[in-house]
Image 1 (cartoon, rainbow, N blue to C red):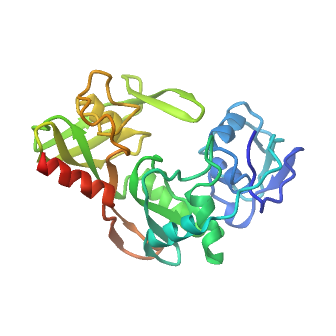
Image 2 (tube, rainbow, N blue to C red):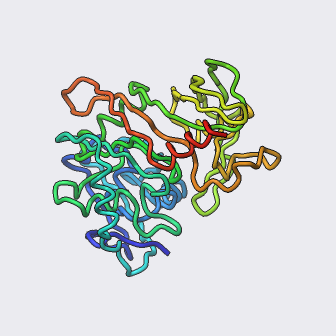
Length: 319
């Protein structure tokens, strides 16, 4: 059962044939469908495409297929509940407004709080993007340019129009953006600088939860790490992902024997348990360098760490 956006005008109980036109030209098939079914989990959209229920000019296509003008997209019936995305709470509205780091006519950069999902899904009836569309009228067409795990805090780019969305997603594919993360990991990270090239493969996915492992037949993934400070039993590091695989930093840290503190999914059972009761994942998207407009030069946007992260670092210094 899925929750649908109150603003959708699609008839979800029958087949819809939609002609590609205007700003939809050049858009990826998965993103095209997400704009009609904004509140349907993306994993369900991928299943519909994979099973051939979605067709473009009567042909099967992959999620990354770019649409051309005049093509006819078959959108199949989707079972949904009659409930809608709830109204934005005052607390979440204030939180989102306070988290804005930078805004142009084309994008918004937010300092996403840890614990806030980027979109709704299983157990989440409103996420960052659904909430953001309700904050201001000029943000009603906001779309995620990329994603952060629910537990990860920091810089996230939101597109305000389709043209910029295609532009910035091309930049991501070209690895033309520079992303910088901070993380606190278990153990004494002894190397000042280390580069990991370990292929990653999604091993399984249950209830929207992906498990990623280092496997020879996985996709190429590369991360550069720099040591900021070692506390002996824990270390503060910087991570610079050169590719954008799911859970890349988390799995590469685990692969090196230094799981991120607070990572319930990738911390080995026999790991040091002195941090077993921490309340968050200590991974923060510290900065991102990218073109914030279609015409503009790249800018470096920095997201300050929050109180829980800074307090934890202070605790490590005192122990």
